[in-house]
Amino acid sequence: MNGIKELSPETASRLFKWKGIWFCLNGLSDLPPETADYLFQWNGDWLSLNGVKHLNAESSIFLTGWRGRAIKRI
Image (cartoon, rainbow, N blue to C red; front, side, top):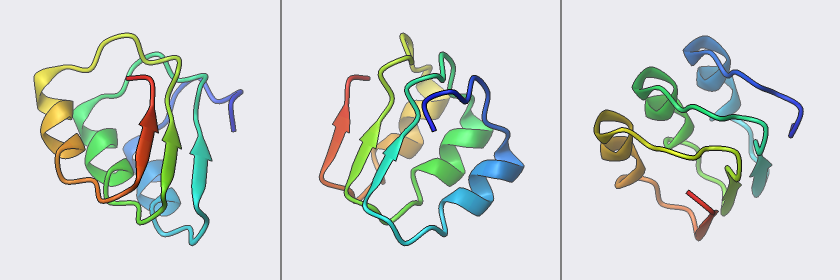
């Protein structure tokens, strides 16, 4: 899913239900809090967000609750 440039909260709310172990969303450059809220509810192990260069304070609050094993490059 590296070609995705934007991820709406509605789409993220569906993705977090996926039972896989790895999400590669390296095409995202921004992670708004509304999207981060859903994305960091995902129960997988690995999350790759290499395109995100800055994570604002509101989005980072949701990151602290993620239970996965590793996030690649935030």
